[in-house]
Amino acid sequence: MRPWHVAKALKSVRSLDEVIGELTEQEILHVLEIEVGSRRRSSVIERLFHQAVELNRQTYVANLKEKYKWPALNP
Image (cartoon, rainbow, N blue to C red; front, side, top):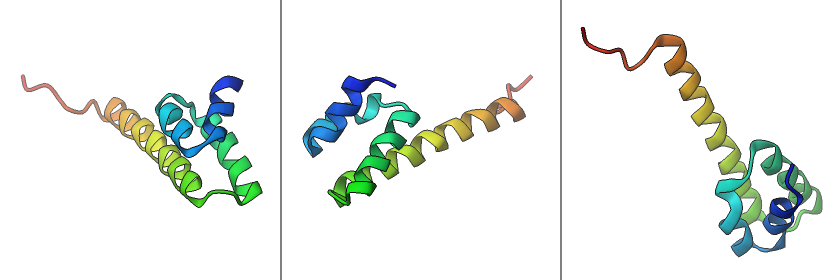
């Protein structure tokens, strides 16, 4: 986990927007846990939740494509 990125994400909504695309799933979940625990900013919680879901969606799609060799090359 990268402390600088986590600290920046927790600083403000603007700071979160600057680094959210660089955060790992672990960092997102850590920041999400802190925000939910403090019941501070619902807009930050929503952004973090959306990013965590999106990261998992991308991983799932990549895994399915790998498993089923999709898109298949036309012979």
